[in-house]
Length: 129
Image (cartoon, rainbow, N blue to C red):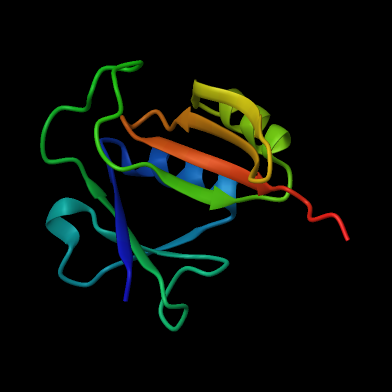
């Protein structure tokens, strides 16, 4: 079962950002209180979905904003890349890659989440029939 984790310094801020960006919900994980571990649930994520995810307190200093990518990037499909990108910038995110068209792939953008992570969004290209 694939699993990813998002590291953060401010759990409330991070959960609010991702709840607004992707509609995710968070549930404290029993036994994870020491690191403020929350399980993530949403479209295609959570128990029974084939992909699980968690959010936990960063165990060291966060990378400086604007520094090079400092781990894997997570990219999620969204209905409107430009709209979600604008939402992210208006709600604590910062530009990492503005919305860009990739022929045959789709429209993609990356934002910094305010917690030292980069997250991507993609609206897949429409297939011509």
